[in-house]
Image (cartoon, rainbow, N blue to C red; front, side, top):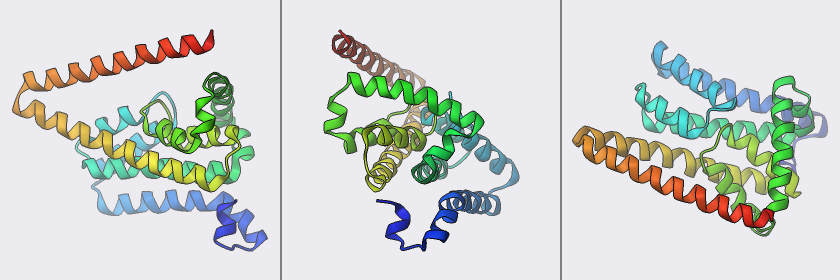
Length: 223
């Protein structure tokens, strides 16, 4: 089901809105940021938003960077979440068109091949596709979750509305989780450098253990 079908747009207007509406939302977001932020903060957050769309930056990079540069945690979380939503709208409506965009098309084709292999090696993803997309958008990896989630949904043959909802949920949990986690670590370092270092070390150990477990399971499935 198309988003435009729910909103009952006429066929001619629907085609126009599929291309323009995501950009209108982006323009409104930028306009709001311009009016409510000082010029330095505005350029910082715009730069981080652009960096998020293009790999290798991801949520785990741009959100902590924004907070470190003085952007309020909730504002950088909302701004990056909106990028996921806006790219999901554009991709959901214009997937074939996006493949023809020079830089984006090349990134998409590379990711499509990797994702097709990943899905083939991970059959469980087809069984829990909705939750799977939420997790894959939520987990911090390079590039926009809206683009990544849309490609995965397309390859799984999902309808557009469930894919979009999964991306929104995953973006909300991922962006606000990383932002709150960054604030927590920041306050921990202010209170005690030792406690902050211990917390970061613990996260690194947990992440490394998770990665090693993933590689082990992935290796078994590949064999």
